[in-house]
Amino acid sequence: MKAERKWVLLRLCFTTLFLFAVWLLFTAGIGWFSLVSGFLGSLMIAALTYGIFIPYHQANIHFFLPNPFALVAYLFVLVFLIYQSSFKMLIAVITGKTNPRIVHFRTHLRSDLSRMTLANSITLTPGTITLDLNDDHLTIHWLFSTTTHAKAAGESVKGRIERIIAKVWL
Image (cartoon, rainbow, N blue to C red; front, side):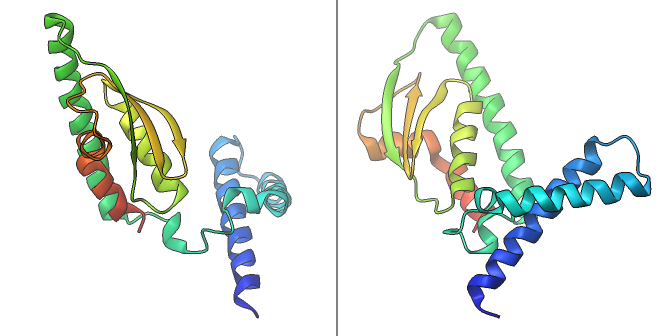
């Protein structure tokens, strides 16, 4: 069997399993009819949409399956950064000291999933909003801007969260 055919089969299986897991999560009964109809429905939908669910150009299992230990570390760091930014935002509201700017920078992350995770992590931290994610270019509204230089702004905004996300999705 060719590698391309194996990749299609693997993408179909992962999509089917994911859809079936969602079916099990939302269905109220676990009777035989419910399980069989849920699996067949998941298989039919997966046959139509596996190319959208897992893109062909990301033909590596590490692009969409996270490293569990790095994922836990990422979640802890994200919660810490959210709290840290919240306190910084509270001080800015009280003192009225902000310096809002739109900054553009690039990310070194390779997969679409890791880039989307970075963009959403930036948006979750108070004081920053991701306006656009186009391939590896991000446009961010940054409330506490210290520089307009793209590389320095990128390091200030994405900093260690990008390094941790790079370990989660290799």
